[in-house]
Amino acid sequence: MNSESASFDWKEGRTLKLAILNADAQTFAKSSVDMDTLFLSYFERVAKEYFPNWRVEVRNFRVCPISEFPRPHEVDTFDGFVVTGSRLNIGEGHTWIDPLMNFIRAHYRRHRFLGVCFGHQIIQAALGGKVEARDAELGRFPVQLDDVGRKILNTRREELSVYLAHKYHVVESSPLLANFGATTLCKSQFSAIPNHILTTQFHPEVDSKLMLETLTDYWPPADDVREATMANFWDENNVPQPVDDIWIGAKLLSFLVAGRCISDQELEVLPRQADIAITETEPTTAPGLSALLSKFHKLSSKFSTWMRSSRLQRQVTNASTLSSTVSAI
Image (tube, rainbow, N blue to C red; front, side):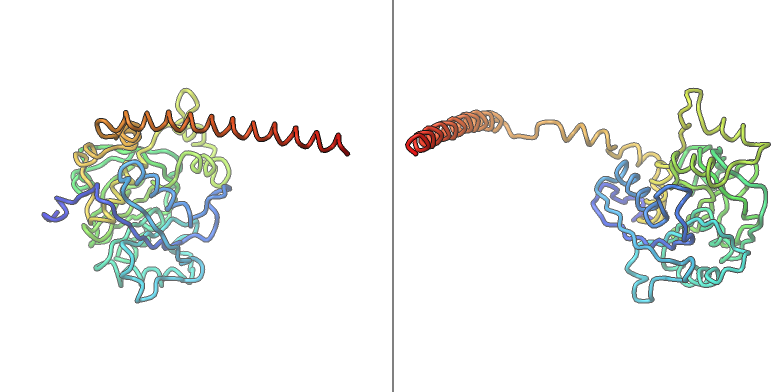
């Protein structure tokens, strides 16, 4: 962490421009939400909660299936690149896989990349990691953080709650990437190169509604784990148990802006959305101005009453004149 990033002003207004490298051409689950809107919606929720003076703009590139990427003169116009999840996998021979890995290799040293699920795997593979099919992780899981993870995420926390939906795992990490965060089945839930790359195997962008659609429609759990999976999703009142999606999102957005994750201490002193809403309802008028405004409102009310009375009088007069005219006819 350098001195510039350590003193970063998180409250300052800014526009964050992101290129979404869309690795999945399909609509997510059976909902109307697709990958073109999923990340924008997620980042807007995060910004609203923690960074209300930030504006997030995204431009989607159809990496899958047509190998669409930012043109060379466009690359520097983005603050970061987000490689999405996908239902397709690295070893299946898709023609857009190699161009995506080449794009990552060409630009990660000068630009910031965020990878999610498939994005995590392909960034690892592009930089020398190994990805293989293993047992699936599907549903809500705890992720354990070690010292490396706590340092990179700038947190005191030892455990996070997340949504997972994958069967391909990073089984050997790239020597260029710090690998951290573990579940029982997968020892690569995060990877990072400070100031350049941050990836997650899990899905921070997926909310409970989309996860439930995944569990019930798109990818139902196997019979032997279905009961445990659904029991871990719901609480005793049949309400989805919470995950740390928005908190994690603050870490991801801050990394894309500043090259490092905002610390827990910095998050704690930021004005939250609830605090802002309360502040906006408090009077902001200067002393003496309130009395003047009150007098103005009273005069306005009297004027409105007079106007209604005048209109009514004109309507009565007009009605009387019309009645006399009709009688004369």
